[in-house]
Amino acid sequence: MEVVSSTRPLLAISVSVLAALFILLTGERRRNLRELWTILASLAKFSIVASMIPIVLAGKIIECTIIDLSPGIALQFRVDAFGIFFGTLASALWIATSIFSIGYMRGLNARAQTRYFFCFAFALNGALGVAFAGNLLTLFIFYEILTISTFPLVAHRETPEAIMGGRKYLAYLLTGAALVFFSMGLTYHLTGTLDFVGGGFLQGQGPSNILRLLFVTFILGFGTKAALIPIHEWLPTAMVAPTPVSALLHAVAVVKAGVFCVLRVVLYVFGPQLLSDLNLWLILAYFASFTIIVSGMLALAQDNLKRRLAFSTINNLAIIIMGAALLSPSAIIGGIFHIAGHGFMKITLFFVAGAIYVKTQKENVSELDGIGRAMPITMGSFAIGAMGIAGTPPVVGFISKWYLCLGSLEAKEIVFLFVLLTSVLLDIAYFFPIIYNSFFNRPQGRVNSGFDEASMLMVIPLTVCAIISVILGIAPDAFFHFFGIATLAAKNILGIC
Image 1 (spheres, rainbow, N blue to C red):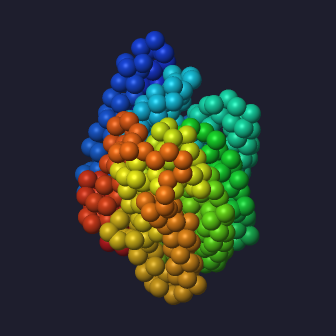
Image 2: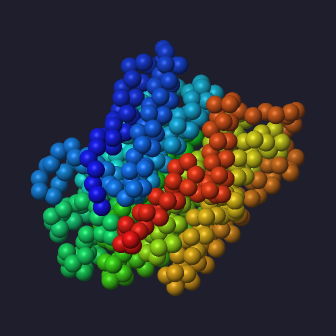
Image 3: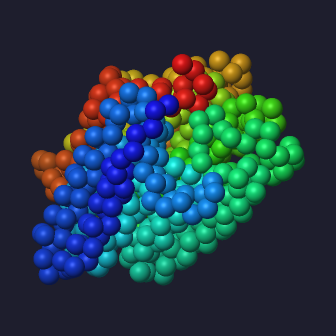
């Protein structure tokens, strides 16, 4: 593939750093200006990322090397189809999350808002650095920037529960990072390079047992951030964070970065051929299947809305990983495309949880009876997001899950088709009662007369994300070319012209 040199990847990543500095210098005394930097930076970042989409769709790779550290190791950004896919998603959702954050933090008159927006900007710097990393070293650096910058966000409320949640978050993720560092060193020892290659570069580079060990340490390391069971507990605990942070964790940055990194290892370090030769794909697929079923069952038991959404996220991340593990064209396309579809649907659901909390101080599913009568736009958006997660047309989740089901048939693995269908039933079981009760049950306590929605700074982002979820379900290449990019990435990985 033709390589094009450009500073655009560096510019897109640097926007967040500049925004963070301006936010810090502006401070609490000029809130409007501080939040203007956040909005302007999110728009600038998305514009730069969007400008690279036509180049990648033309079959080219954009490269920007900062410094060569030693033979085979460089600090380098390399924008391929998979990278631009995740970069587009993160930068687009940052706009919505920035607007929602302003409404949420102002609505609660939250403390330390400058710190919040400062760390928020740095988190997106880390996410985009992960997306555009050209090799394992660059990815690891920004992977850790993402971890450290989100710790203050998880512990933002500074209550004992928040501090405990932040400490558990760091303990799990830094332990996973240590495994990734070991894996990265062993990879360089075996191959002399850390550069990503579509279809992998480890084939024939070491004894089978060493490669199996390397695969396990990579998956455990990155799988921690992807919240695979049983290394998932930090994620439900982190729901003590402000709701926009939860949205950031689930839809934009942290766990999406984790699953992105797992797919980078599976498809760009090991590759389909090596995974098939060593039967590692089957082990990963069963590991992901276990997570899918158990997380869905655990979601049923959660009364706290954000914790239920957290286990739903664990379920869907595992679906993405299982799709990649099946190694068939449709499964890989469906898995990659589900990253974007799930991003828009899940951020809608978390925005709804935040809007409900700001307006009513309610956090539990059992408290939501009749709330759809007072907040019909908010709960209507929740219905769209939940239906999409369950794979209901015409919401975008239907397309990705349809391709995952086709991929299971292509791989001739019916057991994983049943796992997907069971997951859909669990989605219906833990989401649809919320929708029904919110619209058809009598409200608890005082009955509100007329609409009683949250502020427009919250309602508009959640509504727009819900609408986009429907549009992408009808026209999957609308706006962002997500489906076309996912297809191009799958072809590059499988060597299909």
